[in-house]
Length: 289
Length: 244
Image 1 (tube, each protein chain N blue to C red):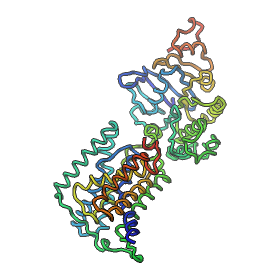
Image 2: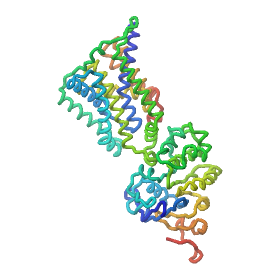
Image 3: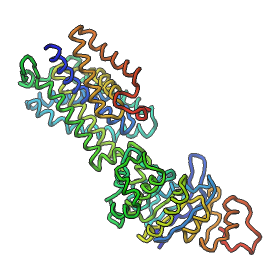
């Protein structure tokens, strides 16, 4: 029964990975922008939540409700002020710019919040769980998967069914022609980055309830998000969900045998996928090119 | 007042100047042909009018309004729409989604229904991904996409490129219908005879300069071909064409 429990834990953890990674996948898919500050921005969201909770005394869910629109706004501002400009100058500038942003955020967080790990109190949610026989389904863990499904499903529907989504896909296909057809690219990209950062900040906060948060957590967050995107396949949002789940399941199952090898196992899984199927499980070779 | 007026247009790429003092006018509802050899600057001129390329000097006026400084996406909204060379559809979007990209922004005669009536073959394939359509179908979608913006000026860049002659004929038979909606058309076409037959006036570009203009019906074909390749024209007096 432990194994079944672990399998579920792994899937739930994978939901969190996928929720973090979906923004990375979206930004790369739409703008070909690799955001190396993605994990750090997720961590910023978590710190924002802890600050809101400390300052106003509101519970976690209320602080998250306040944080998500702020994270969306931060994403838009970053896109309009920095990322867009970097994108226009060529393919290497975004890498350097987002790497620089990552370093700045980590140091700024250390300056303001110190290097100590701080917990994020979830109140009753921390221990609430559904018991089905010997199966334990913690609400907090399930919430990660549910939110991942809602965000990825909602985003897929937006991209597929709305005029906004049509414009995003058209711009991703051919930026120059999209402009010639009257699409205003700057606000469109700003909305994409806003969604990406908001989703990452949401995921980062939920994770921090379990693990706590510290200023350099972003680097680790980024690695797992990257691996989820690559395993699932570049440009495929559902692939990112699958990639996140495989990472989560691998990690939890291996940690039953040996905790130190759990992280190594997920990196090995990543290497195997890269070697066997470099365009990812649900990706197409063209998207990776 | 002309729908589109271009005066003294210079532009190019980096240090390379591609157009030299180009003047061109397009009346409302008129079709004008732009001919010239490869590299003469035809596509550059269309790209500059559409706003993808910034002019160095000169002005572009649409219905009396100066649009020289307007960025590309606003030009399309103002009513200057390009059907790019090689069609350049959004490959991952369906045919209908391609057409819906500019649609509904401005009211006008070209609704989705009207476009499907004009291009029945697009209607039949509306839910297919653009990348999977045939060349002729893709070209039809490209023109429908441009018309969906209800443009004042339609810039057609080599719509017949790589298509079977029968399909090209069908396209040119549709031009009068498109014109009848009040659209002015600037047509770039490799096939001189086809270009002259479809237009009321023609411009010939050579190495970035307008070297010949005139009424399409009365242009001396030999002189035009000479201008096309930059060879000297026939003996003076036999040439009815105004040279600029």
